[in-house]
Image (cartoon, rainbow, N blue to C red; front, side):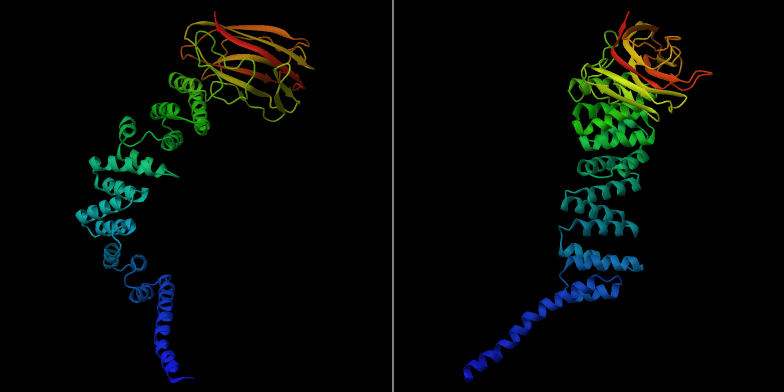
Length: 403
C-alpha cells in the first residue's frame, strides 16, 4: 500500500470512531432515561444535557422517590420554553411548596405555550383550589372549548364551585355541540332535571342527527317525570329542524304523533314499543297497520305500546282507532287506556275489551288532567279465572283531537 494512502486511512480512523460514538452515546442515554430510579435517569441527563425530555423524566423519577425535582423541571422549561408540560409541572411543583405566585406564572406560561386542553384544565383546577372564581370561570370555559372525551370531571368541578345552574351555563358551558351533549347526559346522570332543560334546548337548536339519541333519551326522562313544557319545546325544535319525521305538536289540534304507524318508533312524544317476554310486534306495510302478538307467556300485566301526549288541562278529548283481533276471546283483557301522565289513573274509565274478527272503529273520551300530560297505553292483563291470551291485534287510523 502506498505510504500516502496509508496515512489517509490512519487519519480517517478517529473521524469514523467519532461518528460511531455519538449515536451509541445517545442510544445509551435513551436506554437510561427509561429507568425508574432517579440515579439511572440522571446518567441519561449527563450523556445528553440539552434534552428537555430527559430532564422531565428525571423530574418524574425524583418525584416518585420523594426528592426535590424543581431543578430538573426548571432546566426542562429553560431548554424548551414551548413545552407546556414542563411549565405545567413546574407550576404544580411551585404550588406544592407554597409559592402561589410562581405557580400561577408557570401555569399561565403553559397556557400560552399550548392551545390544548391540559394547561387550561390545570389553570382551572389551580384557581378552584385558590377559591378564585374570577379567574376560575374563564379558564374552565377555555377548557371546555378545547375539551374532548370524558368531560364529567370538568362539569363536576363547576358544580363544586357553584350550585347555580344558570351561572354555570352562562359562564362555563360554551355553545359547542359535543359539550352540550355531554352536559345533558351529565345532568341526567346527576338527577338535575331543572338545570337540564335550558341545556337541552340549546342542544336542540344546534343538534345534528348525532345528537338525536341523547335528546330522545332526555325527552323520555322528562316525560317519565311528568314534565311537559320544556320537553315539548325541545321536541318541537327537533321536528321543526327535520331531525325528527313528525310535525311539531299542537295540544289543541292534533296532539297524537304518528297515528298511522308510518315511522319507526323512537320514544319521546312518538310511540314507545315495549314487547317484552311473550309479546312480539311489527308493522305491516301494505296495507299499513301495527300488529301485536301475544304467545300466552307474557306477564300477567303489560303495556307493549305507549305514547305520551301533551294536552290542554281541563279540555275534553276523543281518541279514535280501528282494530281487529285474531283468536282473542270477548273478555280478552286487552284494551286502550288513557292514564294521567304520572299515575295509573285511567281518565277514559273502563274501556271495552278488544275482540273483533273484523276491522272495527272505537272511540274513547276523556278530560285532560291538570298536569297537561296523558299516557296512552295498549294494556293487557290476565283476567281473574282466565288464562293469558294467545292471539294478536292489528291497529290502524289512530287519532286524538279536542272536542
